Amino acid sequence: VDVLKSWGTQAVVLTGGGEPTLCPDFAKIVRLLSKGFALGMYTNGTQDNFPEHAELFDWVFVSLDAPDDATWAYSKRAKRKDFHRVLDNIRQAAKETTVGVGYLIHMGNYHRVEEMAALGLEVGSYVHFRPLFPTEDTSWRADAIPYLERVSSWYNVTVAWDKFHDLWRWRRDY
Image 1 (cartoon, rainbow, N blue to C red):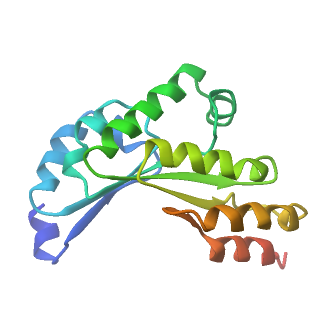
Image 2: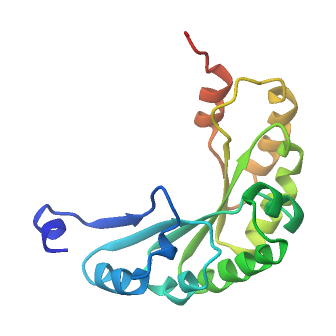
């Protein structure tokens, strides 16, 4: 913390190649960091310790990625019952801080973005759609655009159009 302060750091985001809430010292670290910095976190939302400390965060972003328990369990390789715990965790945390609900969009789910947006707004503060990357199949693009345009006009729903454009124009030279 002292080193970060000496560098002029103003905010810390907990994220990484794993789930930050699984750290055995998560609560201790969050309490320590919250005394000197604005805090944000990317999480899958499965751990109950994140809503318990939500008031210490300026924002939390939960990658939900599915509108129902069966699809969520399949895509996350998790138990269906845990989906409902994630929704409850988002609801609880959203009482204390801004909680974004994110969805990765791809050929298999673009037709469900309205359902996803409605669920995300029901439990969280805002919803954000971005494309699953990388993929070389752009055949679904024309069909997906109307769905994404509709939800992008909803209050507190955003679409990462720049990421979709990058994906749909992505070409490998090798």
